[in-house]
Image 1 (cartoon, one colour):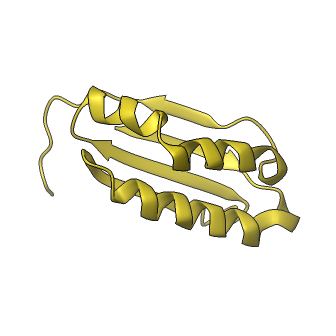
Image 2 (cartoon, helix red, strand yellow):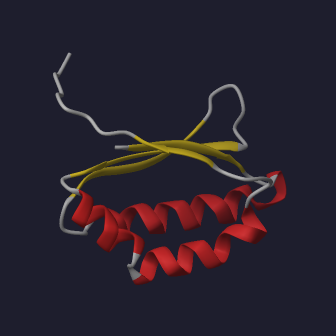
Length: 97
């Protein structure tokens, strides 16, 4: 599981939203992707949150090498207002609530 946040330049919010939606669509089609979502922080709409679930380390590694990831990374410098805070979690058990 991957979870994180990044501040978006306010004047680039519409473009950042388009880029995030395109990234999510392409990523959700990847083998091994369980879920991949962006959201805006309710207290700060210029902060985007990302949540990812992957079947395996191999699937995540393929994702990082994908063409849509390369394109997304190229777009980020003009869209973000600072460094992303991203963490990777290894989950041993998942229980629906």
